[in-house]
Amino acid sequence: MSMATTHGLESQVPGLDIRRTDLPTGPNVVVPPKDLIPPTDPEISAIEREMTKQQPQKNVSSGGNPVANAEPIDKRPVATADQFAFAFDIDGVLMRGGKPIPEAVDALKYINGENPYGVKVPYIFLTNGGGKTEEERCLDLSRQLEIEVSTGQFICGHTPMREMVERYNTVLVVGGEGEKCRVVAEGYGFKDVITPGDIIKTRQDTTPFRKLTDDEFENSRARDLSNTKIDAIFVFADSRDWAGDQQIILDVIMTKNGHLGTRSETHEEGPPVFFSHTDVVWSTSHEHCRLGMGALRASLEALYKTITGKDLATTAFGKPQLGTFQFATKLLQQWRQEIHGINKPPGTVYFIGDTPESDVRGTNEFDRISDATWYSILVKTGVYQEGMEPRYPPKQVTDDVLGAVKFAMDREFKKNPKEFEGEKTEQSGAIYN
Ligand code: G3P
Ligand code: MG
Image (cartoon, rainbow, N blue to C red):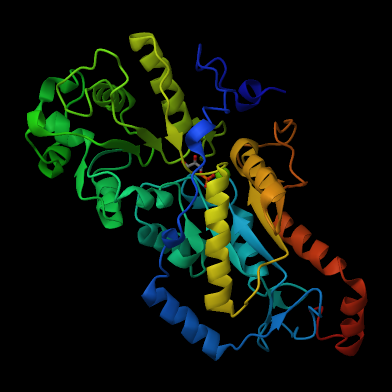
């Protein structure tokens, strides 16, 4: 079954080839610099460290003996598995339409020790989503998933854009609600952030059919556009106004070296455009997938071609870019070391996702170059659903995230049945509660 058919979008988007997930890839691989790993939130870390002190953990290796330190749930401290880890996609795996997927809370409890093996497993979150600060998103997730989520275990689509703060001075930041993405960009260290709202407030005829709301007008910053030179365009989150945002992005791309109000004759002098990911569709509360940032990108490229006759080269972050998985590897290493005291890389990282084109593709391709095994598990609660044929086949398909974590933990512990059974005998009854 084709992507277009399976997503039910073919008839809704005539002329838009949503199967085109292989958007330009040449220069798009973003290699994370060493200093890009977000600092662990000191406040949350303090809490976690305190919890760690109160509940001392012993690291167990599946190569050694995973159950040696296993104890009954809620009675004794659980051990931490050091041979494997989890990385979770969020939309379509843990959340849908702002609400937790029913199995998500149980899945996280399971890997936090409420499992027959009596171990907890380190994990990180790797989402293409964004639109708010990492701190705000982690607080949301903590509440929604009933666990403590730290920025030290979280990467969203725009997190790697921090890399660009030294390179570009004045940047156009597009997408998200109200001023949130400006706040994120300024928090990353961008010195001069301009939004589409700023441009519309200053020149209201920029978008003939789009008027700012009172709040937007109040918060936007009028500026001297004739003296503004935009060095780069960053689409941080999904556009709330495709028509207005595309008009403004095109205006900027067609300038001479980013000077607003000018027009390049060659159409080759505009500033670069960066997207935080390329998901053409994503999973929400609606029964069919909804258009995502990759759709805006495809639309923008098509418009640019129609208007100028030239191809528009854009750069994307997020999954499936290998740089994002390299970034995740470093984050996971730091998380395992700082929070769990594990001083070696995991043998296997289970990535649980719902979108073959970003989650499975990225995991499988990264597995080929990574020291650790990156093992793709596709769930049926999001973009991919029962009956579809995934364009990028995963190593395993499960109904939902709870099935995925159970599968992974069973697989890990079955790898060393001898040691496992040996301990089972010794601690018979204490392990399988
Ligand atoms: O806009 C976010 C969406 O495209 C995907 O998010 O969590 O599934 O990577 P996620
Ligand atoms: Mg997803």
